[in-house]
Image 1: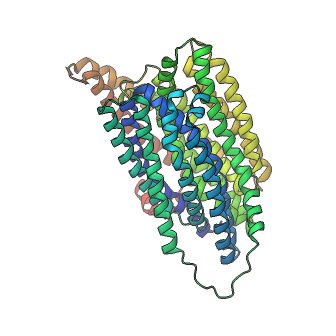
Image 2 (image 1 turned 90 degrees about the horizontal axis):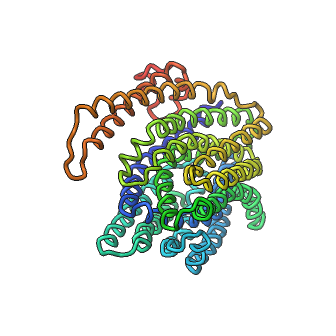
Image 3 (image 1 turned 180 degrees about the horizontal axis):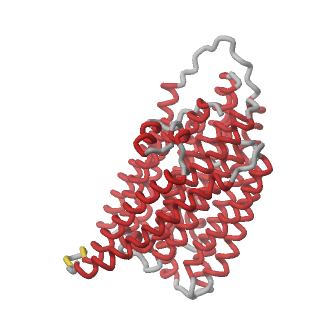
Length: 544
């Protein structure tokens, strides 16, 4: 495989991943305080509004930016700069139209959308989010253009700016409205308005960056670009199947939102307020559950143009190697986080959301398992799309979504299981998707992905790590509970014991996992050479 090509996609992923670390820290500052400020009920309104916004956002931005980056990458690979310029202009107009439609619907029909979701008090939050759809569509066009040039820096900087503004505006408004005695729906709307402001700031930055760094001056021996109609057709041919695949999952999640609230009230016998509380604690657990996937998303963004360039230049074996390595690296990254969330689910929820409903720990345990499957589904979707097989992920998503709805309908309606049925449905959903995606990868790739190489070593390493974390936490909690006893205001000895035990257990788990990964050679010297300063890190850790 060409070292340059490998460096392109993994260096790009490393740049995006660095931004993810910053964003997750800032995101924790945003969502964790909001969950405690708004409480389970208020956070339920926040989550419902965000789910509605997410479906419009997915319809507008899931497939078209991927299609744009792929088309820009192919044009650059074939030496066609005029084609790349015209492709961006056509895409920008398309994104603006689609975004405007979504914004108008959310702005004009917030109450109707909230009632349809069995959460009438979410209407103000939906209205506050409506401008963000258009802003994110415009933002995605600029990001897709830069990513097509294998430039991930502006995307990372823009995302960090977006999160900073979201934190500043959202948390401040939530605090101000709460102290003024505003209603929970109004406090939730203030909190979620930070998303709109963050999108605006990020979009303005991307506009400035492109104008400064991609100057459209004269070109010697310019190529003749395809017609606007042809580019639009190609954009839609590539983008629509990807959008359908992604939007089906968002639609299913939206149906899941309505179904869970409906089943909690109609079948399980909970009141509207009790259902809102359970939905809210589920949303809090989802904040932590989404963490592993956010580290895989940079890899999916970076791998698409790299594989697409290999396919365009007939380097199919190289594209297969990139795809297989991406699956393995994704496993090494996501599995330890998922295992950690599952093994230490109760202490993590008690530390992060001390006033949350008691079911939070069990919810996070199942969602930790689900998070690993989500990551594998995401990266396998990206590899399929990059190879030009955009329709396969639609099939896997439909199969997974159907299983999720069926499982949720049965389990959530059971009063003994209730909200815990939702993450079990998620496990079934993404498990089915992973099986389907593996079958499709075997059909479309020149060389079948080797599961023993991509999954076996990370699984063994994670098993050892999980056992170490569970044993250390249990032992420390038992020992410290007998020697620490005090209660000063909100700071109790129980919280201190949980915090110390969890932090030490996590530290031990990290060390055990690092040793196992090196011993099992789940990460090799060749892998480390592909990330910035990776060779020095490899020498330090004795990775061969």
